[in-house]
Amino acid sequence: MVRRDPRVRLNVPLLGEAELEAVGSVLATGFLTQGPRAQEFEALVAQLVGTDHAYATSSATTGIHLALHACGVQPGDEVVIPDYSFPATANAVIQQGAVPVFVDIDPATFNMDPTKLEAAITGRTAAIMPVHAFGLPADMNEINAVAAAHGLPVIEDAACALAATYRGVAAGALGTAGVFSFHPRKIITTGEGGMITTSDAGVADRIAVLRTHGAVRGDTYMSFVDAGYNYRLSDINAAIGIAQMERLDHILERRRSLAAAYDDRLAEVDGLTTPAVPDDRTHTFQSYVLMLDEAFDRDAVIHALKARDVETTLGTYSMHLQPYFRDRFAIADEALPSSTRAHRQALTVPLYPQMTESDVDSVVDALRSTLAESRSVRAG
Ligand SMILES: *Cc1c(COP(=O)(O)O)cnc(C)c1O
Image 1 (cartoon, rainbow, N blue to C red):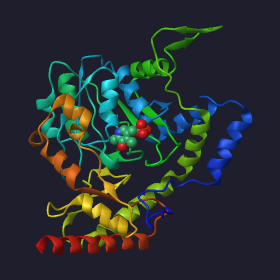
Image 2 (cartoon, protein in one colour):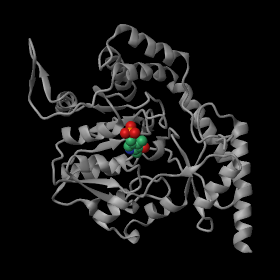
Image 3 (cartoon, rainbow, N blue to C red):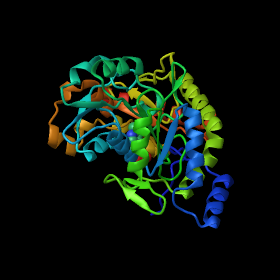
C-alpha cells in the first residue's frame, strides 16, 4: 500500500537554500566539529536571550543534563519538575543520578502549578526545573521566589520557548540557566541540537569544561580536570542554526498569527478550550494545544481527524503514567489530576510557518465535524 501523507501535517520545518549553502560551506572548510560556526551561533542566541553566555550542545536533553551537573545537582539529590512534559525532562535528572519529583500543572497554561511547589521541596532538593510548556513561559516570579527562599538554582527547560518572554525578559534568562532544543519539532532546527544560556559565571565555566571531556586547554596539550562528556554541537549543525536564526522573526510572526486564526475560528466550536496566554508573557506556539471536554475520547478524535487527512497528536506526556516512572514511583493519578487529565484530553493541531489560513479553516472544519459526530455517537 502506498503511504499517503495527510493533507495538513502536524509540523514541517522551514528550511531552504540558505541552510544548504551553510552546510556546504562548512564541509568545504574540512573543519567539522565544534568551531567557529558554533561560536557564532552561540553569540546570536546569547544576544537574543540576553545572557552573558550560551553553550551549544548536541541536544536539549544533553544540555539539561549538563546544566543540572553544572548547577551542582549530585547523585541522590531531588529535582522538582512538572509532571506534564516530554520525558527527556525527567530522563536528564535520572542521568545525573538524581530523583525527579513531579508537581502538578495549572490546567489553564499546562505549566507547573507554583502553588504546589513548596510542598514538593525537601532537604534533598537540589534544583527546580520548570518547563515552558509548548513555548509559554512558566510562572517564573512565583517559582523563583520559592527557589530563593530555599537557596536553590532554577533551570528552565525552555526547549520549545526560543524568543518567548515573561514580563519583558526572554525565556532562558529567567533562571540560573535555560536550555533550548533545535529538534525539527521546535522553533528553529539544526537537525538535532540544543543550547544552554546562563549569566552565572561559575555555572558557565563548569559547562565549558564538562561539555568537552572535562578538558582544559594547556600550552601544548589538554589537561583533564573532570570526568566530562562529549556534548558538543558540530559546526555542520551550527551552520544550519545560524541560517535558521535569520528566519526566526518570520517563523514567530507566522506561528503567532496562525494561532490567532485558530483562536478566532475555534471560539465558535463547542466542546473544547483554546490555549490561554496570560498578559504578562508571550507564547512561541511551538505547539497549539487545546483541551477537549471529558465527553470526547481524544484518541478516537485523533484517528477520525487522520481519516479526514489532518495530522494531530496528544499534547505531551504525563510522566508518572509512563511505564518506567509508573513502575519506579507508583504515583496515583489523584496526586497529579491536572496532568493526568491533560494527558488524556489535550490535542495538538497542525501549526507551522508554511501553513495558510485556509489550512487552519480545513483543520477547524474537520475538527468541528469530528466532534459533532462523536457527540451524536455518544448520544445514540
Ligand atoms: C523536545 C523537548 C526536549 C528534548 O529536546 P531534544 O533536543 O530532542 O533533546 C526536552 N524538553 C522538552 C519540554 C521538549 O519539548
